[in-house]
Image (cartoon, rainbow, N blue to C red):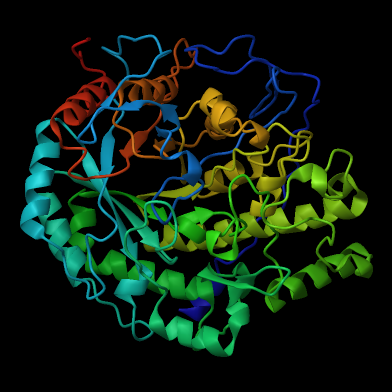
Length: 544
């Protein structure tokens, strides 16, 4: 195994991003169906005229593997769309809704529904199978294509290295197959719990946390020395600290075991996609805004590179550059809840754009891309012939500043004069992996109303990422960020899934709805969902 892994652990070389003048802009999809005065200034890169910024990010969902959501706005809106609760968790459309479009005859976009987080318990047993079966039959009746499930590392390999227990998942998959539904499966190498929507707690495997008690540097670490045990630091990707194995070897062994155990579901075409967890919440990012360390929206977050493995690599990078005194993280970045203008590093004209700042941010973001490169290379070995995907987090707050500080601390080197997502898209293209992102139901206007100080732009974010991925010629899938039951949110999803008047006819490759629940299946809510599925499929839907 070690020899096999060594053959594919080649690092992705840094790519030079496209530059963008902050004075060259275009207006982007603010509640409209069609971009107005869109100006493409370089390959894979669009700019926003109204806000003097040149980038987008992506927003995470409320499940553990996908969290970048504003918790404080949840009572005001769901899915980032203002709406009115009308009792029994039913919802009505809000004023200012998008114009209704007729999607009849448009491309077919498959619709999946996420399983509840606790569908498999810590003993790897299927919870309430009869209830689940009935719910799946209801979903099947309105044409849902399939379901998504997290395969938790902390459940399957809980007690001993390479001691895998897939029993509950096998029973679940059999039910899905019997209903002729498809499966999107997530390799979840992170902890579940503590994020928006997390109603269960699934820690990392016990044998891993035992190692962490003796060697806490296996976890990401902030400048105060606080450890984050959501996932393992990428600094040990190629270091044998996990009972003789490197982190990526552990991930590969887990994926290979899954592929062998569920061979019949691969061969039968039931498993349509494997999404590979690449960081906290399953997203390719640093854990820069952990709530358990005191972060609150819209704080800029903190760099997470203070474990001894990452600091050793930073020292080597500085020495290779010929500036050994650069072997440090910046010391003027504020704290988790700082605003950019309060810091010397992120303020306009700050050190983020100095020679040292550019060196550090290049190193920090390159490590993120290299980690994705290593793990996806092994995923392609394990799942040869099956589509793989990766989740990219959406950091939409402070987007309309020059430095984009929340993106920088998360590892996306995306200030207004640099494209931080093209290197990620290029890495995914290298492995023929799809890009999955969220917040397609959110509106920038709602963010302005709720948190004007955050200078957020989720709509601009979606547009950049869509084009970065499509320009790299990779599939783009998506999810909603917060629970959505209303017409307004569904219409926004549809507008992003199938951009109107796109000369190339581009569209999402799939959409996954967050999440299966009794509330979704209630009368009015389910009628709206059924109508949405029909439109995603390009079928005629009754207008009202």
